[in-house]
Length: 85
Length: 150
Image (cartoon, rainbow over all chains, first blue to last red; front, side, top):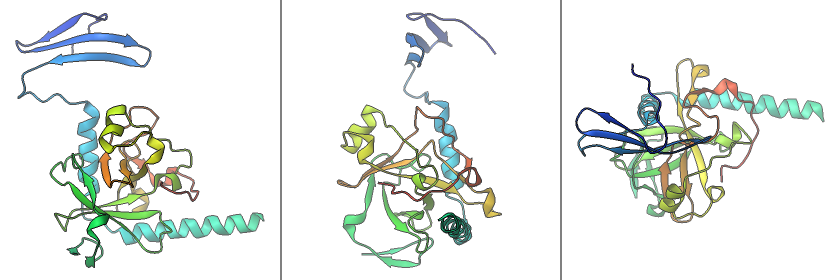
């Protein structure tokens, strides 16, 4: 694991074909430019997590059970509201 | 038009109700057309995002505002442009659920909602940059209030 410090305008070279340049930095984050061959995918890491979350969501499931659970909660909430009035 | 669905058997639908996802969904980029089908008796809280092209592909989605009344998704400028909307508040949002067994272990992805422009039926799944949302919130985390997703 390599840890480096770069200032705006400075770059990193990964292998022979990949160059990452820090464009700007501020409290909200770092703006990077990534120069890499087309065949190398460059993804925000959240994207891989998002893909896995979607794959899990697409699996066989029993929404009727979820429906029952939610109905129970809504009825419980409505009753609680009535009791308060 | 007829469609074989994952949870509702064969249904009739209006072509005008189809939602168009130019970029599909994450991990399902080839699926561009979906229908939003509400589960009866859920008070609008639970729906199904059904692929038109693949009967067996359907997602259970929820109205995020019924989970978190102050849910405030903000899209990036390019995302709004792709949906031909001027403001995130003009859009409808739904979040994908991973329904588990036992069902109390089910989670919702508040970080990657599906945004829908009701006027032109364009839709996209986004990853929210801001906000403290995660991809796998336990349903039990949320107190519930009834609110409109649009």
